[in-house]
Image (cartoon, rainbow, N blue to C red; front, side, top):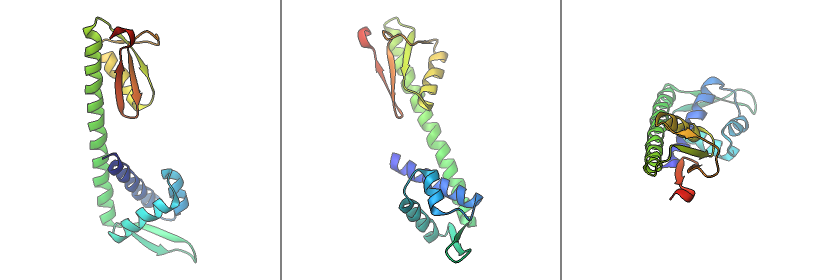
Length: 159
């Protein structure tokens, strides 16, 4: 599922970039996406074959990519899919953190350490505040450990 989500993000980004700059080249697109030029080429060929993007020769070796009305509709669908996926991950993460906090509260503790950073750590902090937990840096506090989108609970000596 995560591969499909990454593909969706790549196609969405490609469509957005092509729409905003038809003269962008594949190398610049690859840099923006953090992928190889061959990956961009593969995605563009798929989008062209499906009628979402057209190619025009702008100069001798320069190509211009034009997003079609169908491509604009696809970009809108992909945007909605991306938002729905992100909200689903947000909800699932908040629920998991709430379950972890309930387990911590069950042993009489109202503080927690968050190990990790990024958006998931922000979701953890927000959830802790809403549940009345202090977020601390104490090594002896139970830890919410973040790896990617996964949040695990390490009770340490409190188990």
